[in-house]
Length: 300
Length: 300
Image (cartoon, rainbow over all chains, first blue to last red; front, side, top):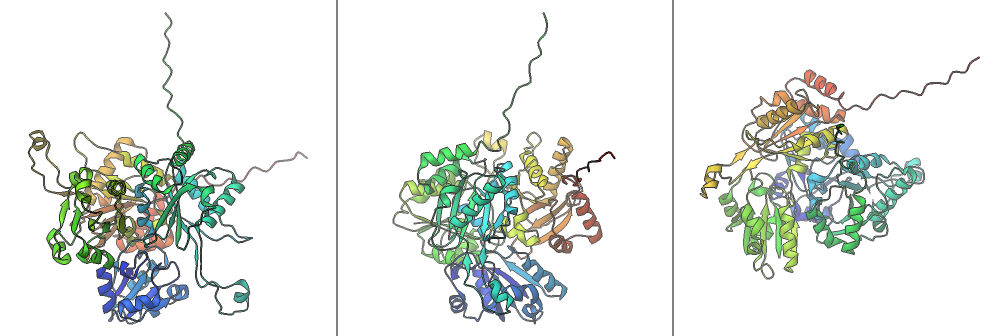
């Protein structure tokens, strides 16, 4: 049996009781270690907590080594641990499909992910449009597919969750060219970098999918003991030091409910200013005002 | 301290280890008992598992009795348990705001909810637009605000998660009129009813937000041992018996990735037919094909 088990967001103890019982009975335990990290735990603290050895599964292993992971899973129980919830990334449906081909049964044990826990900032989950990803820009590579998606969301009034890039086990171009398996230290995009990249693309495209004055919420260390929210404009957040990773960003849509706004006011510098920024931003993508049809005039 | 704790979707043991440790140390434990249910657990099995008495919090208590829930929370620890994740419903941000007013600290312990666990059907979470709710129609009341939202999602190619109505502790009109506190048995909308209601509204509005042939995924008992997915057209699902509750429904958008489709094929009756239905549905809301600008003809 293959068990796909979500670990939640932060602590060793964020695993569910059922997840923990399952890990304990598994013969091999893999930890998917390249799309996210647990903020308050690492391999050794997890091993201690589970009383089990953990095998780190990097991108190569997950994407090309499914058969290695699944070896013996027709007889033994194998656990595949994923930070957050199980089905965040494509590659894990690959693993399940491969298991099915091999006649191996699977079960998933779900957990919180940023996709639902972000509701803790006070914005309602059903007011979010599609989630977008923001990758680190380089001098020559500034992928901006997020721009059209944010535009689509904001045109219909919805909030946007932006997931920020995580670079784990990346090689420098030089090391890659020379075939040296030397990896760069992990990098996690922070709020300020994300906001600056967003502003850079708006400056180039000038289609006003958003502006420097668009209200956003900086989400830091969601689900951890030091979880913090900061509400401010995109420009303000481009100067904001959100502290240790992981960070995400939410850009507000026009449909801000009074209860949502009231909740966000806890997290802004100045309530009056923030209210004004939200009101001003609501003018974008506003449907045209209703004009009643002209009354016909009858000649007398 | 007020602890808001998500319980996940199905079993007593779907609570996180940290959540369980917290419940055990709390002086009073409330269970929000009107927006959803745990599928494989009830009040008494939870009480046994926690070794604690549980106070059921119905809508009246949560919406008007915040001070009763929060009583003594400045000194003692109080747990407020929510099926799924903590911030699915508006009312819980109310509770947090009231706690803040009273100077009571709070912490949330997240868990899986249908909003992220639905990824288990193989459709990618970042391809979903806004989530919509479907309530039971009556003879005279057929609220259809979902229609415009599905249209918005599908216009930009996105999938839609439809949450289906749950009626707990509802009074009949007669009992309400007579002031009798007699409640109807709980009702959970099933897939077939949901699909029929969707078809009914499309027949009235005829704007083709979707058609009877639009591919959907029936999601039954998500996160429970009997979790089932069924892929088919809306019309097919209107005849589908999905078994015991809880159910949700996903309507596909045009942007179906090959990997998503491949995964869904496990859940349909006939692969060839389902592929054809998906291809046909992709013709809706398709952007117009690119036409190169006409070359200028020079007179010779």
